[in-house]
Length: 421
Image (cartoon, rainbow, N blue to C red; front, top):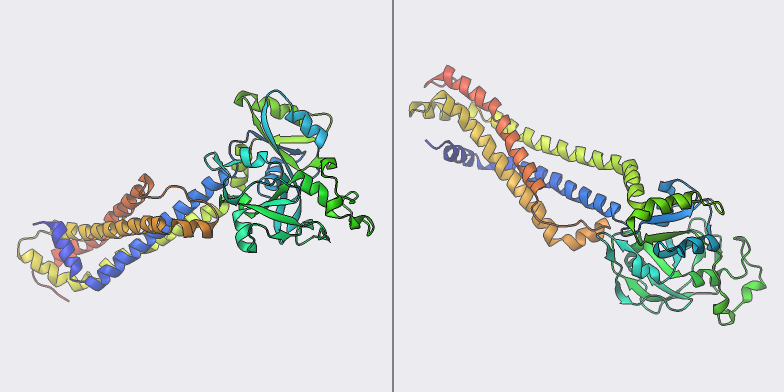
């Protein structure tokens, strides 16, 4: 007697409840695996927001604060870094490259970042992926601007469009640089990082829009009449920046360079290793990740509880079936394993369908999901983790089958060949 075939035929006899049970387990499995893939993708994307950068240097503050405003464009620095201090470190013989960053302005809620063309050459994200252009090219003129993918999409800007920037963030902007508009010359490809929501301009452009300003105060009416054509572009000199990214020639020099920055006497500066600071920041925001995982596991528990409930509620209806099996030679232990086998089969089918569905869905709708999530999800396809989860669900289904199996075993002993309903 093949118990697996018999168990499947018995389940097919109750097609409606069997299909609902399998569907419940499949949905639970798909939800758990989907949450895990998105969670892993979010964490990987978060930790790889900036890669290939050895150190981030800014004014003296905590590592998380420095990381937030320099990489994630969140918050403001405690102070700026003087151009002299920046040059002192940029010209060191152990430095391979530096990228200055200047923040403080915005446009319709998007941060404006002043930098150099080295930003497009040396900035890396993900697995050391370089920034690429969907259209256009890096800025060359003082009032050229390069938009992140999300910025261009939400604002609807195309190459050649002009726009003004505001002094400060949108919620706190108190002055507009309406007399000195920027022109879109390039749009970056989507990265899934804060770069997508950033407007990139040159350091000279930042200086140009602030001609006549005094310590952050708007210019007088008279000085504001300076025309763009009257600006001496060769005389534009950056006095300070917000922070700068640093790449060293040797990884062994990272700690020494960091110590030199932190003990720099001419100015109070801090240097943080991006990977270390990102891990610290993730520990702060990781509570939501664990809560999401917990919800997914509770959904799995609900689906498997439904499996147990379905089999238990059918026991009384199946007493005649069990009596027939006993009459043709089935033993009590065969009845026990029949119920265990049925629970295992239903759990296996549900877990397989759920795992296949979530992976197929991610493959077919990868672009849409990444666009909605705002970060790359990484590789798709069946993974070892998916297999382990599916096997775990099957094992739990197998274990849950012991309860209805034991009850059926006792009923078969007490009923014998005579069913007493």
